[in-house]
Image (tube, rainbow, N blue to C red; front, side):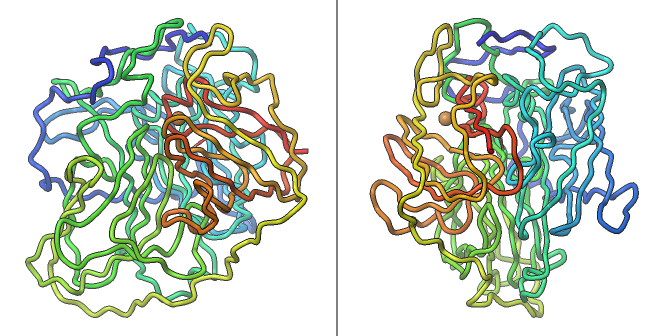
Length: 486
Ligand code: C2O
Ligand code: CU
């Protein structure tokens, strides 16, 4: 795997260490929680809504008093939120005004292959030079139009960069945003709505003294820095783009759509005090059949948890902090209980017609082994002993048939499959669905030396799709495989 510099600025980081900011950091809970703006269509017709997004650099204030140059969808970090209806098509013209090539993937989308964000289907920048020469994909000059049929149930999806070899640094610099699909089944539930339904997009970043992002030097040839090798973790936690923000709430139920958009960090979210707990109502692929209660929420990169938190047991004036138990209770964000209020929401015992699928017999089984390793010149991470090669289809998968896929790991890897969601059948040999594995998932966190079996079925779209590790540095270091649906 040869990496060339596509205009990426490389900044060195200590090997194997947490990236520590050099900038003056604010005290936590000073910055109000931003809500990413909802993207407005340019026009709509009977079946579709048409949008235009400009990928551009922007200088924005993330740390109070400092400017950070981001690469953002519409210059924002996170990008604007798409809020769309199941069954209505979303057409997005993505214009690349950056000086690097980009690819857009709708994570969790049931998307035809030409719009799925194949890592070589790059949008070449109109104002850039190209020092990186990749083998041909379906490249376009300046812009590309992606079509998302949204033929799937209500769910919290997200879109992000997927450029071959450069996904991690480009997402780190800002190329990620939410894509929320709604449907009637969900709308008819008495769940918290309006400004009591809040996205929480969590991502860790580090900042240089001048406010610019710190990121490890990209590997140049076979030498890979250990900090990059393991995946980048940084010392500032952003929620919706703000460092350790604070949000005022009424003493009522709220719905939070939690996305871990971090490159490599996992969180175990918990409350520092009080009775608050998370009632999970949905997973990556939409609503569960019934709610599941959690004291803490373990969330790996790219996973989504749709949860209800009831603040009614707090008093006005109380503060409750969400911390990361996997990082010595490091701060994430804080809620201030502002006032008592009427709550007309509730959590129904039955959420959805979602069905737990039985384990079928006599179906095709495939094994995917995620391991550190080398493949020819490539050193880094592999799947089934191979570095990602876009010319090689590691599997041909028949549409409309259930298959059982087995994921095997050496160290921790969050495994993601494009096109179709799956249900976890077993983890570590246990058939009981583990605490955080409920529902339709598209990303499953596999712990060290663990075996997870999932049930998957691809439908509708023939073409080339991906399975990969969603530790984005692992992904860029070729821990990705292509398969073809036929
Ligand atoms: Cu969220 Cu292939 O990616
Ligand atoms: Cu990995």
